[in-house]
Image 1 (spheres, rainbow, N blue to C red):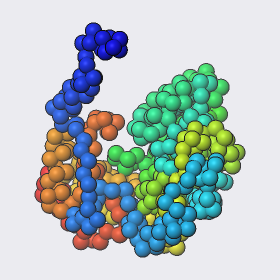
Image 2: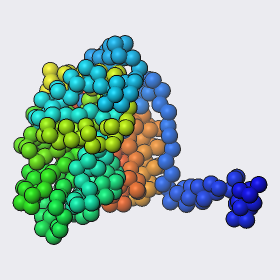
Image 3: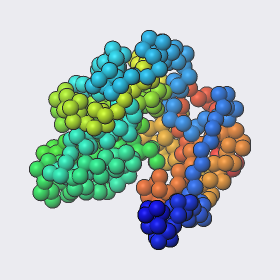
Length: 390
């Protein structure tokens, strides 16, 4: 009775507690920023340029068979955290082969790329650490910076001079330079070699989120670190997802063996999270082995992206010149982006629709992701639909 009286005196009963959510939703609707879930059927008739399936491996028979075999062998789930029962022989094999393929000493697999980024930043940084973060970094890196409790300096986008200036002014004992390898909004690549030089000049480590580089950049798709010649360096740590080029689910941290050992004992998103499901491990391992057997897939993804961007730019659209498999096309405003994406779907093409706060510069865009398995006819169709519906 006392609790009920206190609620009444505050002027809000149980049914009013979340009224503020409706007010926020109304403001979001008015700004054209409401997001909605869309369930897709097993057989979707539209051409998919909205996913991150850069190599077209999600439904490849070798990948789905590997997923099924792992589930039959190990069960539907990992059964526990990695430190208890959640590490199978398949996890160990995937980590060994990822490290070898990407050129690092060791690897550690997580349940997602998001948790991998949180792990690296919270375990390698703290109150005595300066984190220099690119202004356009992914949300998972931003959240990791916040959770790390160190001071964060926001560096200008892809600007090694800005990184150097931030590091030169530091008073902390340690420092990390943190950047995406390929940025998910415009598809441009970070100057990794220059960033590493800036970090080394001031005794800092470099952390690279290679979510959009693995499978697309570097020899045979070995990643942006391999492309820049920095993979395997003692002061470089990389993260990546298994849900893009490898067509599965999960994340990975790659780096020096001592860093990986440290994460096993210090990364909360590793220690307290259930291990990645065996089916996802099997699918990622199957995709990785397929990529190693067919290294031309990486070059095919880049070729498709550049052809698509060229067609759109030549027709007068403000389309990015892609360094990876991401092509973005600027829209007039959020409402225009939503209408444009919906019109594309009506014409048989699925594209991404990026609006604030997902875009760091506040510019709404359509995002098209190239796939290595797209035909010339499909690329022409996709470009034609985007132009027709603008």
